[in-house]
Length: 431
Ligand code: PLP
Image (cartoon, rainbow, N blue to C red):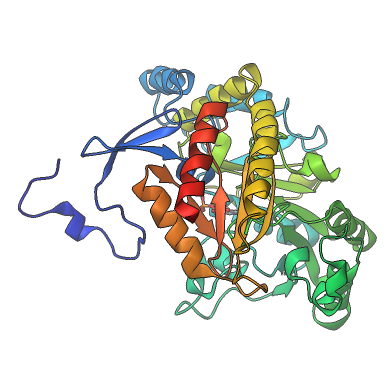
């Protein structure tokens, strides 16, 4: 318990929102505890990070072991270190084989920046196409590529130039569908979002100036939106047609989250650059990009790096994370329980007209709240349900440009009983 008169909580920057009244002190499996001893079922996974659960014993052991061998074995002074090589060997088993060369940094944003720098230098082109409602980070470069909410950009202008936004394939809020309401819920075969990308290439960023298309295969902060496979395949085709690089940001959707190791497997699309972070090291700061060797070789030696990128302890944690995921079948668990969760939430939706859509892949599931009778986003309802869940011991996060989507991102180690408990708390909260 914090009892000092000069309470350190008063000195935490208020730029961090959502501070719990009581600090968290411990995490284990699917649970976290605050300093009063209260236990919460953590269906936020620390924002999609602890896919192996809090403090998985094998990850903790790998961290302990590496900490005793070397906390920081510099990777950019003419050496690589052993934990990084072991991690690369493990990643080669789960990343598409074409993407055979790796670069590591610390955060998701840094990895996105690395991908953009690689794309610009390798193509000699300047511009990037990103998508409306997407989130790629909070550094100056990545916030310029982010459009999920203005709060991430306001007061920080001017941003990085050369960024162009196209609409994401968000069928529930597609203007084409809105014009034809009878099509809602039908399988989408519409080319509209792809036409918008082609329109950008004709009207604002010429192909010969466009280095990359950067896209989340499942929209994360922007609302847990699963696009039709045709959308991502169409982007691949556009990239191939014009020599543009396709960068898939799997920072949130990767590492088993969607019931496949990477979400790209659902869509049959291999990018030129794959960006990963969050679940990669079960909570230690580590991110990375993977690309074909031939592409990585076009990145000038010494032109990018960072003191801590690919830290030895974080690499050891990441290798252990991959082994745990493989040996404990966590991807399969995410697929199986994800289907169950979707079915349960859709059943609940049938009795709740304020739930406009339930969607997701694996254990990356969104529940979109609307004002009954239409599709007007209902942020207040999402917030109050989230708050009621917290009061009853279940942590959930919201997302979406309008803050009206509750996202379900539990650790992939959850049991069926824990899932049922969470759904029961959510059902009560709806009342
Ligand atoms: N990309 C995506 C898809 C994300 O969801 C996030 C974070 O939520 C980021 C990038 C940025 O990652 P970080 O917060 O580690 O910089």
